[in-house]
Length: 305
Picture 1 (cartoon, helix red, strand yellow):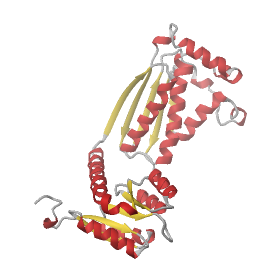
Picture 2 (tube, rainbow, N blue to C red):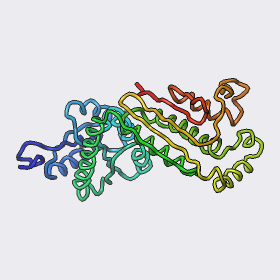
Picture 3 (cartoon, rainbow, N blue to C red):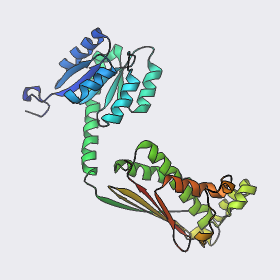
Picture 4 (cartoon, rainbow, N blue to C red):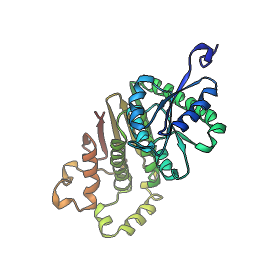
């Protein structure tokens, strides 16, 4: 017998959440006919949150329009408390906008109510399979104690956003910070990388950007192809453990005296473009330091919570 063979007594479970008793029975009947699946039921989102810890469903199937707690609110609650439990939406006419918002909040899929009989069983199998892969990946990632990544990028500003996105994904996989913290950390990384390219390797001056922004970027474009700037690279070493992430970003420019950096928290400097990046970095990171030569910044972000 296979693990999902009903004869083995090992059913995959679905929590059906709908305030309509008729719709609950309809969905339940379809699920019972699907091989290896067993339904449980809740009348709304609040009741579902009470049932979830009791039955540990493999999948949650929810209506969108319900009293007390609707489908969107349930998706948000499940994502917060049970992030590895996928939610499938049952959509009806008039709930399309709400369903789109729920998908953006983390719902795994949706099935129109009028096509439950044709599509529900297949959708359950697809979503469950994807969720199991995610659970297995999470188990492997939980065994990672330390990861070190080395990157080397050219003086191309368009490379910054993809690299930051990649580093944010690594932070998520290592469970180092929540979404809001990840976005703030991404802002700090973006500022540090941009500084290394434009101020470090290309030798551009912040004051020029404040007085002539177009000229600033025009000069940056020219220097990308001129000696000695064109051969310089930005090197990034990202080290992630279970407790913190460290980012060392080094350029090959002439550097500067870190002691001469203006205090970004001084009200007189808040309005200056040159101080904004450093202020964001110091605000969003737990520890920041420059090397003596001023061509490397090291930033530390510790696990939130």
